[in-house]
Amino acid sequence: MKEDIETGKHNKIVTRFPPEPNGYLHIGHAKSIVINFGLADDFNGLTNLRFDDTNPLKEDQEYVDSIKEDVKWLGYDWDELRFASDYFEEMYSKAVLLIKKGKAYVDDLSAEQIREYRGTLTEPGKDSPSRNRSIEENLDLFERMRNGEFGNGEKVLRAKIDMASPNINLRDPVIYRIAHAIHHNTGDTWCIYPMYAFAHPLEDAIEGVTHSLCTVEFEDQRPFYEWVIAECETESKPRQIEFGRLNITNTVMSKRKLKQLVDEKFVDGWDDPRMPTISGLRRRGFTPEAIREFVNATGVSKGSGFVDSAMLDHFVREDLKLKAPRTMGILRPLKVVITNYPEDKVEMLDAENNPENEEMGTRQIPFSREIYIEQEDFMEDPPKKYFRLFPGNEVRLKHAYFIKCEDVIKDENGNVIEIHCTYDPKTKSGTGFTDRKVKGTLHWVDAKHAIPAEFRLYEPLILDEEADSEENSSKNFLENVNPNSLQIIQGFVEPNLKDVKPQDKFQFFRHGYFNVDPKYSTSEKPVFNLIVSLKSSFKLT
Image (cartoon, rainbow, N blue to C red; front, side, top):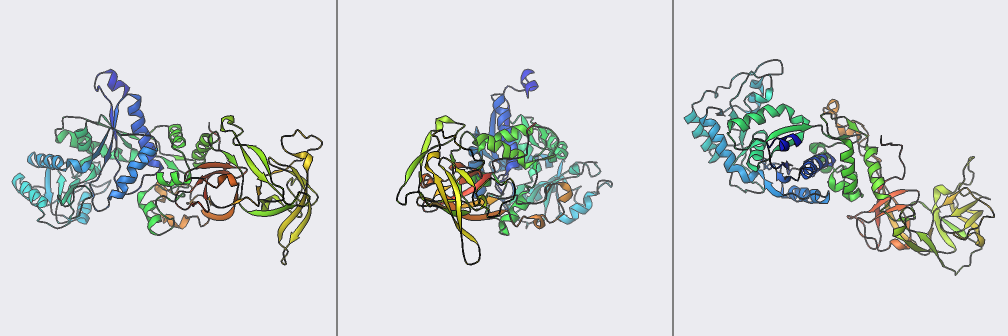
């Protein structure tokens, strides 16, 4: 791009993001979005959002709307909104031009027969019986195809190139097929539709795209892309450049597979927080800033290796650590009664909202005789080096006092249901008390004022690290769906969170970063999605 600007080949860089509206965008699309919009911005260029809507059987307005929302949410705005379907008449004219030049013909072979005639990687294809039809007959048949005189699959229009080419993509590829279907944008105006490989270069040329940036699987299609540009005699001459697709461990990004997960109810929709869709990541609580930083860190190359999913989590933590208020939530509550604390007393304690960001200020949290702590923070018979609560041991309550376990209350089955403690009023947090030290600090919420809450904890949806690799393409990926990918538990949060709004984000002490779920959270009972845990072994090198 820099060279093209410096040499005067182009005065303005123009790119495009061209999704097909047949599904929701995923994290792999985010890479294409960041590259196309980002590079154009670097050169003060333009980027169009263009919907490659050439297949009415799979496309829907729902997907158009979701894609526009996702691109905006990621922080980008397109210069022009375009649809491939806007160019159907011009594409048809270019197909007629190819026929007149003897470069295209109407074929009667079925899709299966076309595959048989195409040959293999080691054997050349053979000519269709229709290949030598006259220009006049092809023009007539193609017009009749447009007029709806033939049924689906009865005829196709093929480019006439070379059935012996070592590149199978040049062995007379189909460029138009018949599809009697209602199109989301053009209705029933058309019953023939261009194939993507034919439409895409024409769309780029019509829009004046200078650099058509796409993933590396289209590299073999580049000779046909250039053939279309040359033979259709377009005024603009875009250049296709490929980059490696984004693969992430334990993640599938095939639209077909993602749709299967939705259709077979493994998830509760395209925006399920376990899905790698942009809408799923947004609902889980990932931020657009973190996704952009992650994509930029993965770089641009021809390679398509796997990136550790922990790398994405790393950038989420980095983005949220100064933004998310710190608070306390109890996921698996165990009641603690502080027996020497006055029964009717409630005091308000000061707590920092984020020790790493003083600008976020402080809050007041209530403290009284009964509190909840985590079940895992108490053991009746602990192992060595267990520094939390056990009979006779003393711990510090975050923002509050030292408490000491004096008694354990059990139910008839021997399960611990309540513990009784005493507190030392001289150990109030912030008073500078130094008489003795304790090794354990526990988070808690006041039982009298606690807000019931639901917590949704997530593990990878797919257990196979390289689920999207070519080697696994023939395997049934559903066999590797993690049955424990979602765990729903009931707990409590501080009363300060009673008015949380969807997409509010918090760091719960010792648990991780959480997001208020926009789908299931209510004013009566907030629902928090685990975004990422607090720590990871991942190191950014």
